[in-house]
Length: 183
Image (cartoon, rainbow, N blue to C red; front, side):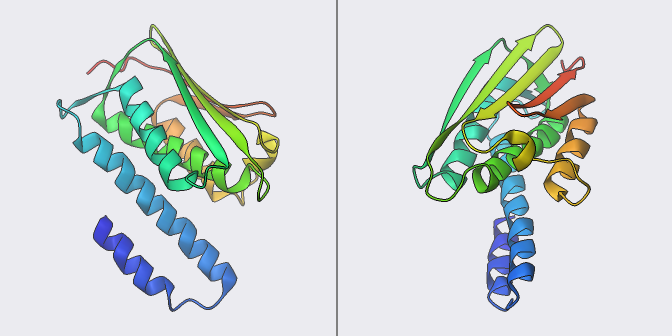
């Protein structure tokens, strides 16, 4: 994946249209997200299961460093409960989280403004609830559900793989899934 990113960097130098460049950069960010998720899965001691809360904490830190490094936006992470999930489910969950956090960092705050992104994970029995709030623009404006928003379509598809529900409301983005995740 790192090699593909390098090739895409070389290819991007040939793009002259600003619209094409934006679409290309969007694809490149998704490749980087996949590489980030894969790297965090490779870091586990059990190849078939992933400890959900530490996995999400490390993933949020990685996305924060990659997309919020200028210091304008800070990310907080809080969690209650614990859960092991199958590694095959960690990929769509990680990709959904990446899409959401990147979308918020790129579209949720006006240029030169500061703010906070708060990720809260709550595990109760078989239910996992991930709520993401931020102090920027209204969430329903930054992550709208029209058919033209590829990020939203991808998040919907990833959350569907988890058997979950995704909501983008005025005050928060929420992913809820109830499924037996024990490996």
